[in-house]
Length: 294
Image 1 (cartoon, rainbow, N blue to C red):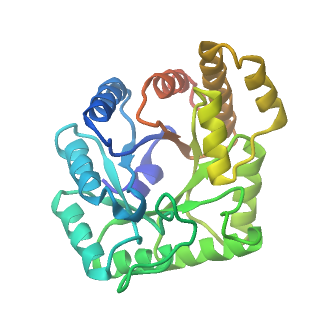
Image 2: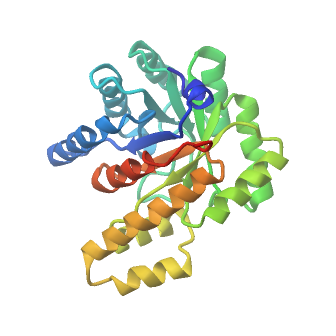
């Protein structure tokens, strides 16, 4: 089923889980265990990321097919412009379609690790808008795209970012998923600005539960994401107690989600990091929320 149709018809918030292709057997066991734990929560959809430079494109399609056909989950395959010609991109899209998958998240992609400058492949595409247009012109997928409440690192300001987001909508994007954030005001201010700019598609907030201080600081630095001072203070107070950090992180993310849903967000997209404990705890609690009219 198409994700835009799921969002439009669901009587409850849309919950989705994002995973990445494992690099070794241990990682594969971790992913399978996470899915075993999370499938009973009946997510609206799940997604699999795409390695920098397309390094995991085959694994991404295989895992998306497995989730769709074997696990019975609605699945979305990520696809980036990096490291592929247009013909190669169309081959991947053909494989995704052949697997019976209805949804693709179209991204430009980050530069491969160890490089800082983004360069398109010879015969490839430069922008996510180009990829969205390619998919829209030749396939019948529901197309998701990314957005950045704290502004994309390559954008000079929010106005430029919103202009580009509008171009994604015009190219054919059906919904957006945000980069992670830790201050809900950032999300709501961004959505308000997007609506003012004429962007009408659903904007699903992306949330990551904090489970370790070092990891979240590294992720925030890489993505140029703000960590609010009070949040950092609470993490520092628990620096010597990993379990306390994890418990606090789950509580903080739960509060974020409750506030987001109460104020009109269409659902929550969880960046799971291929772990189940935090996402399972938060989603289980959110399932207990009464309906808005209840």
